[in-house]
Image: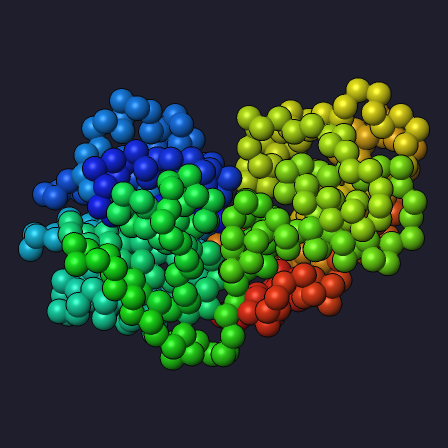
Length: 453
Ligand code: SF4
């Protein structure tokens, strides 16, 4: 999971891009970058670290230009290194320069990379974004394709998830893979700048006049003539006739104040909570979320159960998402740094603890232990998704199948490992009831049915 931002037509392009990246920091905390076009060249700044540290006011001052694209990275393909961070840029002798930010993963990466390398194309990283950029630049510079036709060629041959922004010195192109795995929205500010972002929450802070989603397989060209939408029938490029949006964007990844795949994230989460509560037969004193991604799931559950919803577990917001940390030793330590129970709150209480998902089970095990030590009498765990049994190949760094606890243990064994009194997952049928068009979603990490292989 990563976050992207693009600004076209603002003298404050770098500053707006920085604000957008800051709003999307939850999508990646490992590194961040920005490429800014000043009309003659593209300036690039990318570093390991958080947006607030990499893009200080002094650094932003040096990034002049009317077009800026940016990226926050959480590593999937390619190691944790600045070489694999984005944006990627290409300077060419014939004049145009290109910069690209993308969110997703390419499943036939090796095939496409080998093909390009045989043509003499050089790669500086192992990142999907560079592959997409080099594929387009190869077709434009060596095969005389227009940029638009190079993107269409990409949609025909490069398989996987990609919500992408490509900037040249005069234009910005926005395009999304034919399945629409990852979100992408764009719009216009009241000052007339065009803005594109992974999540609508990044647009909201920039006073948009209007905003909407980039459709799967759509190509949008932004230049001095305005915004031109080139819609394609996505079925030209894919094997199913439905979209395959990532359902986990609604369950966990996206911010609750975003509109993702044309539905409010907070409403989907509340609905999941109400659905879990529908057939629940426990009688808790209190409903407590594992903050923050389970907050709205727990709220929906508590409303339906008519039980008090309490923020009994406090999250330190200065510690990153545990799931995003790449090493297990860091992950284990940060659970205790990240969560702390309210003093005296849990003593003698029967608690429904609500979380969005169970991946390895290690974090929840420690949280349950924290609540037991804080005096909780009973802990009933309710999970806002089915059991995660398969790895993701579309932009999420889920562990290998062997590391996923649901592949090695039954529900009761997981309950025992975590130390809860009871454990219930959301079923696939229940999950599908939480969204308006369930056929338009990917559920592969639950059911192993991969839309693209
Ligand atoms: Fe999302 Fe899971 Fe599909 Fe990956 S496999 S795109 S995480 S639903």
